[in-house]
Image 1 (cartoon, rainbow over the protein chains, first blue to last red):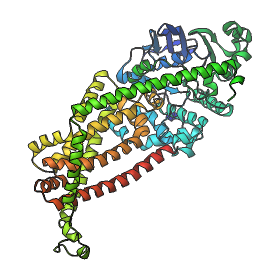
Image 2 (tube, rainbow over the protein chains, first blue to last red; image 1 turned 120 degrees about the horizontal axis):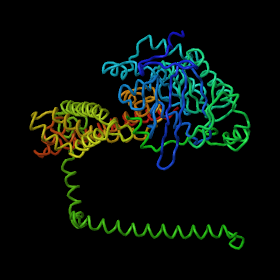
Image 3 (cartoon, rainbow over the protein chains, first blue to last red; image 1 turned 180 degrees about the horizontal axis):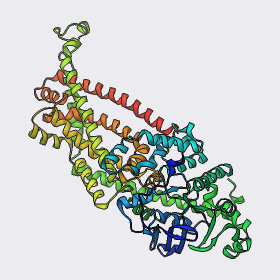
Image 4 (cartoon, rainbow over the protein chains, first blue to last red; image 1 turned 180 degrees about the vertical axis):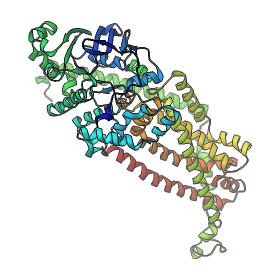
Length: 306
Length: 297
């Protein structure tokens, strides 16, 4: 089964730089994003080795979401660079950009499934960019997916415990199930990185646990790098190898979970850990279905249609 | 009720409410006055006078009197040779029904063709999906161009080009339909949720694939509903377009009007009304079922 999910490498080929942590994979260099006069992300530099599970924490508006969305270029950086295995992905366009996006699976807070399509088709959507050329596009426009891909989709659903719901409409599923469908869709892309933007913020605790466990399982078994935005320190500590704490668009802490002591939390956020979590819980993006603050519509559309 | 018991805050609120009401009433009166002035002006410019209306009204009745068949109770169900029977009135029923069928088929073909073109053009014409600004403008202008020219003008051109017959009518209606539906389609798409679109783009899908998977499933019931509505409109349009020689029952109607075959006029008009009512009824049912199915999530 695992062989189905070997990371695919159409996007960025290039020399791999090795360091003491293993293969250095994703590098952010001085990444900055301005919205008008505010700095959403302010000079962030990170190096993420392949196979790491990174939790990005911070309050709403700390820049976590923009940071993640810049990595797969749903948001365009104002300045700075993103390197993947030494290849600059900041300036990619057209097919190269689509290939890069395919190699970064993305999980959204609101799942972003097509509610009127069945679960199986929603998962097969992850294969769309694996059908190159005009002929490939035409075949996919008529929903003609090869049997092998259907099998692959069903196996991904089976792994996430949803194979019985494969022919149900996506909007008949619970939030937790929908998020797992989104994970299956991301797996179909055979990604090297998964970007999870508040994956559990709309879920109840039990569903949140299954989703986080699924993400960790993907990280451990396929060695897919996971970058995960989270509201709660506990969740980040429990599931991640490394925590990046953001405040006001800047990285205030970057290290192993054990190093993020209560004293450090108070130093960064000026509140105790309990207060931080309860503040996070009081934020609307956790309690309700609202989306997190997002960049201006026009800018997002420009990025999406690029 | 108890003005004396009103708290200061409530009194302030009440005063604000009264002020708002006064303001709204004044705005309404002003708007009404402007509307009335515009109506009078429009009536004057278009030479709409009550005198002419009163003078003309009886003549409408007179025309109806003329086209009414002279039916006789005794012979109502007699054969088509007997004067005063229904069969005599509709003596050409078989060929009229055939022409009606032709009209409906013209409308169906034109609606299908027009809807297909509209679908292709509506994706780039939707502001939220636009891949490049100039493609957006191009598709918008193309839709406008096809929409703003009346069907009858296209029909005249096509009759001149392809000769008298249904082909000219089909093309004329199809082009107008493409423009009209394309605008409606693109507006539906502009109201679609963009979260699936973002999901598709993030997974590396190209523009066409994102349109197909993120937008089309959301808007499909609405598109079909609009297309059915347009089909009704096109059946009416196809009945009239025959006047310029573009086929169907309209061509026959034009001839009997031109030759003052009064009884035939009423027979054909009645047939058209019945046919349109029937199609209205059926498409309405279908549309309601569609929208119902779309609503049941």
